[in-house]
Length: 288
Ligand SMILES: [Zn+2]
View 1 (cartoon, rainbow, N blue to C red):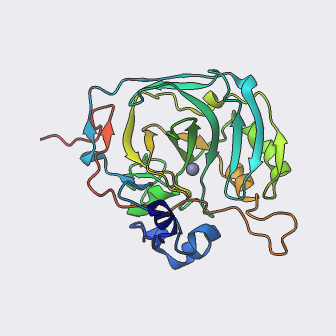
View 2: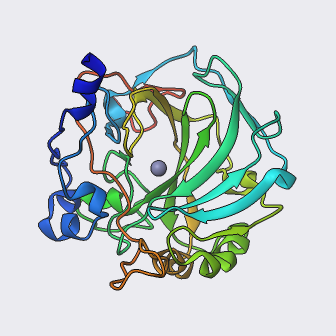
């Protein structure tokens, strides 16, 4: 009985504290899933959040991350009506993530991106809202870090996420093979075979510097079982590559009104006293 009651509980849509997210226009352009109150439980450990670098706590116990990949385990790309998923065979220990805050070894199951309608927003998590390199982003308002889409690698068993910031910049050569395949899965529910894509080409050069905190899935059922790992270093993709992401559709071929796949992110959630730990000493500490 209790379980049924919990399932019926409706969570009001929380407002995001970022200017881009609280704009009525942006909300109206988001996926229909976020337009109505959600009939799923929402607790005190929800994601995404903003990472305030100076409030993050250095934890010397956080070990380096260790990854291993086998590109031959890449199987298919799937438009699930919210993002595109690049899926891997996770029946063996071929693509794994260990170390860091993780107690066990996790297998890569899929990865996907979140992006905005324009380059001004699109990420779920943000870092200091404006922390990214000033030379690339001169004179941008404080909420501009929302322009960075993030992509996640989702690990099997515990749905832990490893998340890498993506910045609009130079063309990502490794990603291009995936970008070239996207027009074949333009509509919702289309799946194509996709082989030999090495996910390690999407990792930044330094994977030892990261933040971590306890949060939730960012799509229903919003389960609060996720250890998030957020890389400090970003990767770059070009505007043209992002334009191909935006040419995908939330809708299936049969639907009369077609909707572009953009703004496929959840708005930010309150931290509610949670600690964000870092594997490195904060790099923006001011001299005393
Ligand atoms: Zn996601």
